[in-house]
Figure (tube, rainbow over the protein chains, first blue to last red):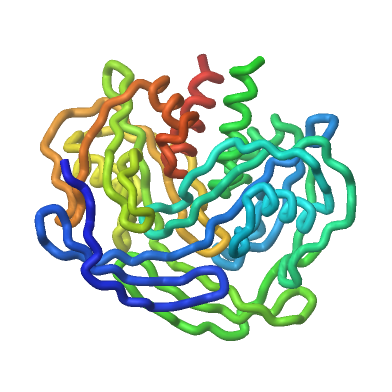
Length: 180
Length: 180
């Protein structure tokens, strides 16, 4: 089966600080035309920071889009030309103050491929050293340490409701339990 | 700690078929102003359809935003005023042809709360009856049945890279293995 949708026209709607928006007119495999609304995003990195006593460091922050305070793994968008590992180490330090000399890639995925190209890259960070956090000027972040079981429980009860955090923690648990 | 960001001004950027875009000027807890780019989405429902012999029905479709054919659970956006269960049953039938008289809620989450309010509601569907699929005019869908192990393997190798599918399948596996 042919799936591809050929771009016949692109309308640039918005160029923003984090996202751009465009509408593509596409030719479907059946030769009919349709429109695709697309949110361009530079991609982001999420980190699972694991302390020496096996706690996970999460951040609590207000998310304007959903008007809620969410509990998430530390994360942030990739700067132009920035290396993924460097981005992971930077965001970890900015949001939590912890530094690390070692991160390992866990998984990557698209958050909302129906309308956005945002790709999330998840890293695991160990050998953490405490430092001083330095969040972006417009970020208000509170740091919380939880055990893996506490996090799984919060996913089940719905208290953790951010897709990248759920993907990261369930993938990590799954692999971890398999390797034991 | 106060987290809330008060909306001081809203600029409507785009009103589309699936998404709207707005930019809010917010007052941060420290009284400074910042901008938040927000993609409004009506929310969506995803379904894990499980056959009598414990296979999962997935759909393969081209996603223009990422220019790739992705393997996903059946899903679709909620129509105005539509009940979530009704939406799940409808999307399952439209995309796969299978009908069901019973769905169960598994989990709900935000796909990309950093810039969008899209909420995903995941249901499990059993007692499936075969029928005729009826996808939207602009949807090209291929149906594939896989075992749970095959799916977990494809998550690990990166062949499945859609967040809602990963969250749905890992949550289901996690709960399922706990209840055995």
